[in-house]
Image (cartoon, rainbow, N blue to C red):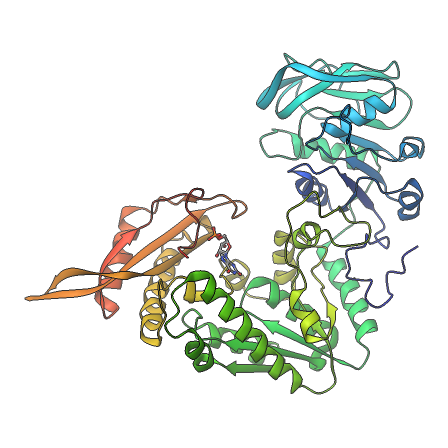
Length: 530
Ligand code: XMP
């Protein structure tokens, strides 16, 4: 069995078997597999994604309270169809199969799966014929979300149907003797009206979980682990001003106090007041050993005359590593580097251990920086989803304003100052951006949008101020609503709010005589302009 406290292993994507109540999602590559884990955690039960072909022995070792087989793009009768170790059906551990997972279960028990006569995508009404433990407390008719071409044709003799839709007689099934269930629809997506309740019923009624997993106990456990691992050595944490790095620093500070050194690089591409806010939090509030590196000139010099967006990103990335490395080398006895890597990054990187394979999910660059820097990694948020990180941050005493801060890209204002950047253009953008955010906050809409900012365009337009003609910069305002930043809708800012933003920017920011509003969604546009 993996030793969870062995150096290097703890944060490397292995399933954490120390959890007293653990539910595993066997990942068959479905788009919503992560969501299943999220919904189970809503029940205060720890849940992790694992590779679909994890051996029965390993599963027994991990001792989960339940297994959920996710959906996936394959057909069980296809040549390359991913399968499970069939011995898992004999373990006595409750199993729930969702979509492809249901097909696997039925096939393994002697049923048949075929392409349905009609494919079912979207909402449909599901009629419950036998409530039992799974549908306990649900109404007899409920809207569910379907996304399938195949369906169970012949139910094995050992199974009964619990629910049906107009075209799918086996929308939910149950094994007659074993604690094995299957759903053709996706309870994990919010379009399934009572999906959360269904998963709660599986986890609580069928698996017998009590729901004891709490952020506060997780903090205690992390603090303990960090202390043991770090000993009397020093940890460096790079702060960006964002939620993830701030929560990482806060939990490390709780664990090792003054043995933590934070590095904050001021690259000159930050938003107004960011440097002061970081100082205030981590020097005055947490009293960490904070190194603020003023590298504004170095970044600006390297970026001089560069207008191609990817080129700008590359330069900023390279200079950042240089500056960070230099500062880190000046810190004595530094052995570890703490990073705010989150669980979705770990899953998508195809991290080693029991985690799902990278071939199924998109690649994500996790842990690139530390290998170049030669530190051992500490990633205390590696098991957490974003909203869990926020809850942890609040429990650790970080201010609401930081916890709900919109994401800010690494290259910062450089990719919002279109074309070549200069100190004065960045100053103009910084002032306009501050007004956009201030007005959004004042109108109570900040939490309604997921990202809002100003963009300085590389064009000038004619205006008239007083009696004179002006020829000045144009600022665009961008605000989007999004669940995952992969797709986004432009936000309908009320006219009076956008009006105030415009008036203030033109009156207060020198060199700007026009404000426009970006009404494009992603795709085909992106959230950032560069
Ligand atoms: P796009 O513009 O691709 O942005 O729709 C999606 C999300 O990613 C952020 N973003 C970045 N974040 N480095 C980052 O750390 C980058 O180079 C970068 N480019 C885009 C963007 O702000 C949005 O949240």
